[in-house]
Amino acid sequence: MKGSRGEFVTFLLTVFCIYYNEKKVSNISLLLKMFLIFIAVFIISEFVSMWRSGGSFIALIEGDNPLMQFIYGMGVSYITLYQSVKISLISGVFEFHYLISQLLITIFSVLGVQVYLPGISYSHLASKTANPQLYEQGFGLGGSYLGESYIAMGLIGCFIIPFIVLFLINKLEVFTRYNKTFYFVYYSSLPSVLFIPRETLFYFFPYAVKGIIVVFIFTFYANIKMRRFNNG
Image 1 (cartoon, rainbow, N blue to C red):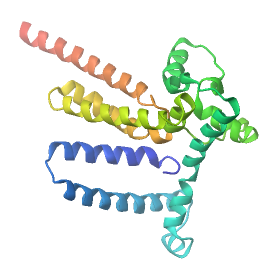
Image 2 (image 1 turned 180 degrees about the horizontal axis):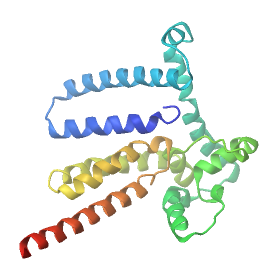
Image 3 (image 1 turned 90 degrees about the vertical axis):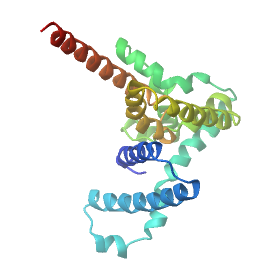
Image 4 (image 1 turned 135 degrees about the horizontal axis):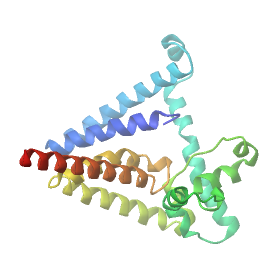
């Protein structure tokens, strides 16, 4: 999605994930409902675009085909993947560290270490190589975990990494049924996981850490209150 709507859409998808995880539905029913959800998200997306641009509903209807505008807006996502292929062909080497760029950036940020971002972050590398002038002005293409996968492992990485991601999401979701703490951490991090097609592979990492910290603080506070209650 364009602009900041990605956060809204991934939050909405997370809500649906929680709902359907708690409720048993048939596959056909789920597919139909997901299709209707996609249509609803598409319509909401266009209205948000209209609101942000200061337009009106009439202008939206009378303007260009909204469906074509939606597809056109997705083009930047494909450019990020194209850049990974282009960079790999030019360099002739695969650089695995781009897969863990978010982890490296988080660690360096905590330590206060300044780093050359295009050297460790694929999103910065893709933006800089695509248009150095616009990159220097603060513009960028965004990220793509598929782009990271390709530049790290080649074409096979675009199959292996998504498979691992889907496998882990499926397996970890099972644990949410048995552990309330894990339930909170998993679903508080899920929006960022769903956003990785336009971000880094470990984009969720800071959110998972924050979720763990919140759980720790809440548990610590609850234990103190319980001890005071028992002693009082």
